[in-house]
Image (tube, rainbow, N blue to C red):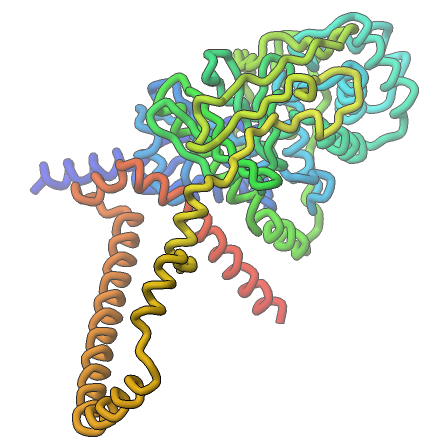
Length: 545
């Protein structure tokens, strides 16, 4: 009995795990979770700790033992997802960048998005021309050290801070000049808001690059933004596809497919190759989730839900900047974590080597987009016009969305398909067939003679036979309806059991199949999110009344 009690107590102790989540200001939040705790529980703990209500834009990211990044799924166990030894370490990050960050309801939300975009600027994910880079850095200075003070800020003070992966002395002087002459008097909240408004206009806003290669073997980065799908090569955006033009996302092993339908029924398939199957699956998951968030009603309903927030604005504790070139984050930020330890870490996530657009000569030669002719659907004809082919370049010229339009091969309607559809839908007969039908047509006398016989048959046997046929058809229809109803109920039951946490080998095997993963992320998750938004809206209306 004593050994049984001791083994039971040890098992209960093993069910508690320590989790450390690094926040956007590089501070850390530590908590303890149970073995079966879902991702939603940990996320709610964080949002309560941060006093955050507009939480649909954020997520928790982690790296598995194979060095593959993932977003924590809220409906699954945290322990089972991480597959690593405790203590667990994760990061709190912006997952869905708001299309208009200035329209966020609360200042605490805008501040967290500001911290995320500031990280993007430092790590080279947010590319911009020199003048925009100077203005963004000046906004950061104003938000975190306040107005220029000659006694506190000697000449060259802006060079003590690291805003970008690398920059020139000329850019540092420009940053100090803007901060000194144009931003005086702006509060931290105002500077952060102006920073967000400016960052939103950049074409790499919201980019989280996924490394891959195109069909020609050229290195590229795929990314999903609030406005669509983008492909980056170096510091150039070579493709931009709006969300409403993306018809399907698919992956097979290391291969990622993007099905695009543009104007005038032009259809293409873009094909890219990820480093590993796990990276390709992560890329596909991110694409499915971003498309569901931005291309559906989710983003709109999130904004509507945010508009209903009615509370006193939570207090934000901002801290001054730390002048250090080796520090990836410019500020310690508010001490949001209840754990009194803030650890600086060197981050080596330079996604794009260098920041050529920040140099004085930011002009660069456009690179033509690579051909994807080998990956198109059948009956697709490549219509490349080299003279009109252009790509967008991040440089000092004004950006035009038309510059990023892909040279699209035309998917012409096949003549064979048109003829086949005519035959299926009942096309007119040929002249020979019409002549044969005319020759076999009975005369008026024959019709009259046959009519009498038919009337006699109908009176004697027609009605009982019709009734029997009707009864048989009705019984068959009832049988089909009952069978379809039972199959639908069994399918729903199978989906519910598979999406549950039942640890049965049969359901585990189903969950690990690519088909189930695709159904889960492409259909089940958006539908569940839509129902949750609807229930939340109804409950809010009920509470208000």
